[in-house]
Length: 63
Figure 1 (cartoon, helix red, strand yellow):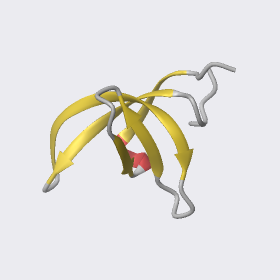
Figure 2 (cartoon, rainbow, N blue to C red):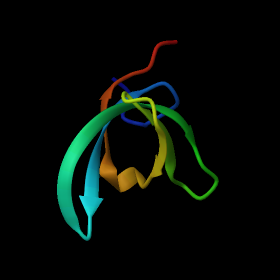
Figure 3 (cartoon, rainbow, N blue to C red):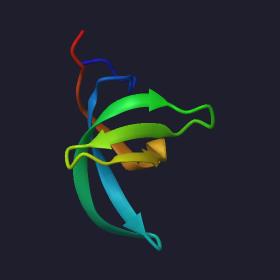
Figure 4 (cartoon, rainbow, N blue to C red):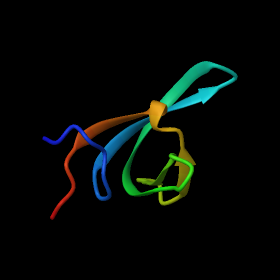
């Protein structure tokens, strides 16, 4: 498994509210933004932009 997060990779995102961890959700990386954040499509279907500090890679993408 590559160490660098890239498009198509499966990730686990930690939800952080007011500095406290409030759960996790899984998703797929769509792209990096120009500001250095990740655009992720969660398994629930919503698209979110999060800091890369909150993301842990689970598996490489297909292709």
